[in-house]
Length: 163
Image (cartoon, rainbow, N blue to C red; front, side, top):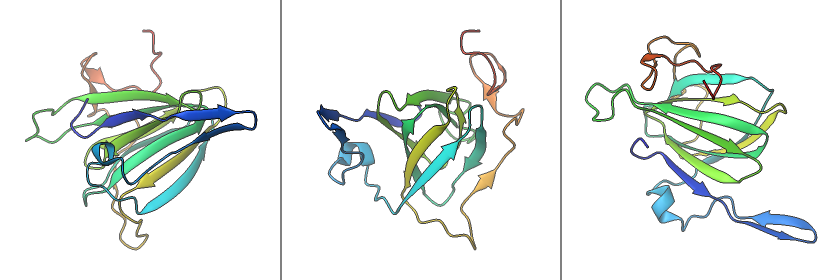
C-alpha cells in the first residue's frame, strides 16, 4: 500500500439487540498516526456513482467507513519526487465487513459505489472544511493521466473486476 494508506478491521460486538462497534477512538495511535479528527460527514451514493478525483494539499487525512453497500476506494500517487510515483491502491469496503480506510489527502483519491444498493459512508477528516477556501484539487473522474499500473493504461472506474 502507499505510505500512510491503512485499513483497520472494526470489531462488531453483536448481541440480541443488534450490534455495537467503536468506529474511531483517539487512542488508536498506530492507526491515526498523530491525526486528530476535526469533522465527521455522512455521504449517500447511488449504485455506480463515481466521486473522483480530488486531493487535499494542506495536510488533511480522510477516514472512510462504509456502513451500507460496497464501495471501491482508490488512492493514486503522482508526485514526481515520490518513490511510489505511479502506484495506485484499491480497497473495496463494505457494510458487511466494517473497516476504516485511511487515505492521506496528498494522494489523488476517489470512490465508486460498486454494490447494487446505495452506499452509506461515514467519513472523518483531520481538517475542518472551509467553504470559502476549500482544500480540494480536482481532476475529472475519467482523467486519462491517472494510469493503472497493472494494465499500463488509464484507470477505468467501470472496468469489470475479473478482467
